[in-house]
Length: 333
Image (cartoon, rainbow, N blue to C red; front, top):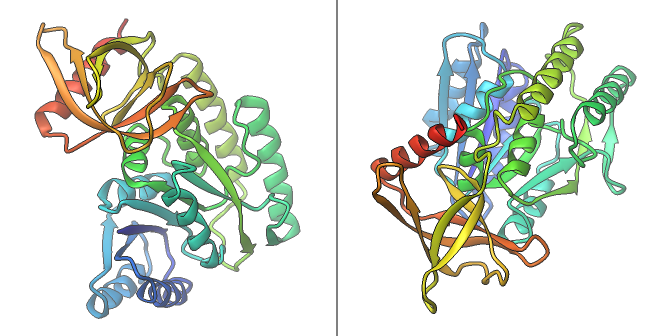
């Protein structure tokens, strides 16, 4: 299943065309899908527009917020509500052509990436952008490169896709509600060890932008806050390596070290990483003295990084709570 998340704030005019074209595209595909529209406390008829589409299509779902919290909050809510094996979020104005969906899914399903970023700065991208947006984009890009170590050329394109478990693990840690949430998401992804890839897109300006004169200032302040938070290791889920026991189907248990842990998975340092899909069992010693035993499989494997990303399988609420308690304990050390 593909889950598409669309954040919307006062979008009663632009949203109908976006929903019509997106539903037409999805109904023509061989896979199942869901379309989650998150109304961020709109003061116009956005919710009514989506409700009408809900009546006509069983894959449309309205998530309505009573107050305006920001694009980041809306995308987070949609992602955490999603059920898809793959999750994509895109803008309500359909600025990015839907032709990019197939390219994005090809990268995710082939196993070459855990998250895929639409880039307007790729050599083959086709971009139509107004001069004010170009100036804003240049200024933010320069500030972001100065304040963060992200290697991506375009962090702000509103077209990004993830493997489902990866999306929910990343957004479960995100906190920013405003326009700079994309940067935080990518920084968390790097800390959690997920592989990201940029793809070219066809993108054009659409009338009705919600970017105001104060937006650049807010985005700059968010970048400063992110720099401070990540330097203080607030988003580093494990300040030190965690010793754990990993057992593969064909071998004896081996002591390994996790360089990262989240409620969705773990990145484990291994000399000879097994292939993607290999089932594994992870045992973690809890402070209480009990052992947390978790079934997992290899989600991505990298000989260059000398490690594998293990994705936990069918976590129960007690297991998830135990992981979160362990993370809180480790954060305090």
